[in-house]
Image (cartoon, rainbow, N blue to C red; front, side, top):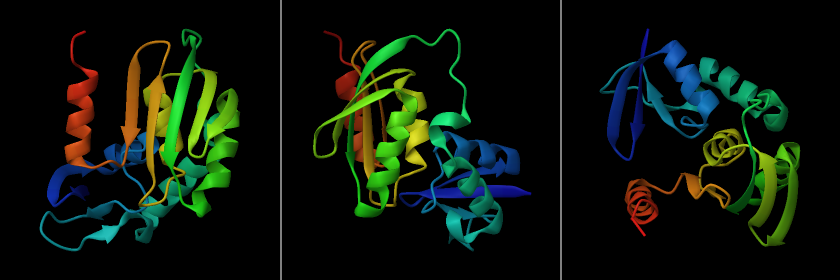
Length: 166
């Protein structure tokens, strides 16, 4: 069985069920993502497709305890910035504490010290976000960043800015 994903009007795929499940686990497919078994029609939100609903529910359970920390992952300092709806905030803050020492410093801004990477935090936390929520994770220790749900143009601008030589 093949699956397709539609993002900003562009269709990606085909992908196997195993690939799609991995994408859900990585946070690359969210509840609001459009999926179909046909490239041209039948698009549904992932949360409306029974198999995806199961995978999304799995991904939402205890995000901080789902994946053990690799023994070679160094502790780092992170800045987490998120625009969150009221429905997302409590679960998001609780999940941050599962990763390490988290401290809110302003509305939508947290400092976190944890044995993780920016990409791992983004992948784990993105499961808790609603359709319009946005997230950026800045690894201040390693000069890395990861983000979620900003759109193609902003994605490109972040890549260009972050990748510029000093």
